[in-house]
Image 1 (spheres, rainbow, N blue to C red):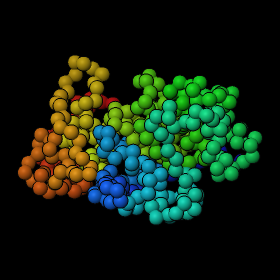
Image 2: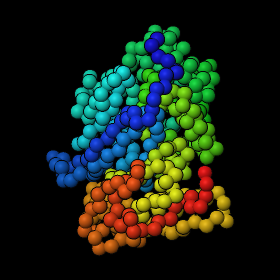
Image 3: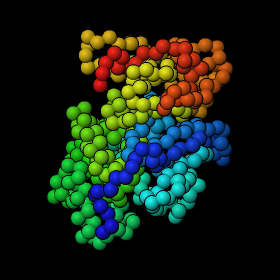
Image 4: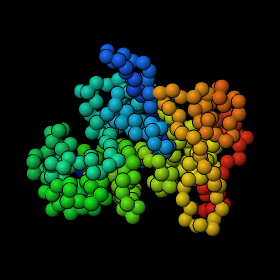
Length: 354
């Protein structure tokens, strides 16, 4: 069977694997007997970013901001409304291909290289199938290997994620939440992908188990040369696994930057608010404490100007009139705020070393 656990690693610096350009995903709002469209929920509205091979981009924001939608559009579980999803295939010297307009047949070779780990391990595994059937399903669909070779591959994958191969004949109800998520990881690795969308992979787990799964993902990244889009609402988790972080609010990116840079010196008020909610291990340490008031804006009817201005304590009149564009303000730093250069915002790691 032409599947291997190991993948040779080459030069990674500047080797762009994925690039998203002006990505949009609108869901229609229908009313009446004839289901006429009366508007759109702009779940993703003009998002652009890139990820290099072997890198991890953390995507954070409150619930409902469009993080999961981005992951599902990139993997083509949802069709894109507009924009480009540029992906570099595994062939040596291959150019980046736009996945957005491809049909089902044209997508087949790329689906093997892009997989997703779902948020809830209790609902993402079919309770009527054994672990052997669940993990080997991608192999059967793609007609890879004989039945015996598929079983050997499943045993190899279970060992890789820290489970015993003899467990493969059991059903999902026999496992804990952390073990189920490891099974989900094994399924995502079955076709030896290059890129994985990890959609809140530890949010449904106990804190002690979260650390184990996060360490497993980091170990697999080094061993298999994986590239991650790590989606989460927990900034402390994202910092642990990501080299770069993108902050999202109501379908748009408001700030991107290196993990430590963003924690030490946020440039957008929304990022500052998120960092203020990160628990501090030292109760005696000083931190910026304030409550973010108001509700997340409605993506079907966003406010004019900056979507964050109704909740922003630094807002001026221009914020309600003119939408700030995402612009570069330093090496690897972008922000969508009219006053990014003037504001002195508080981070979560001020005066501290890693």
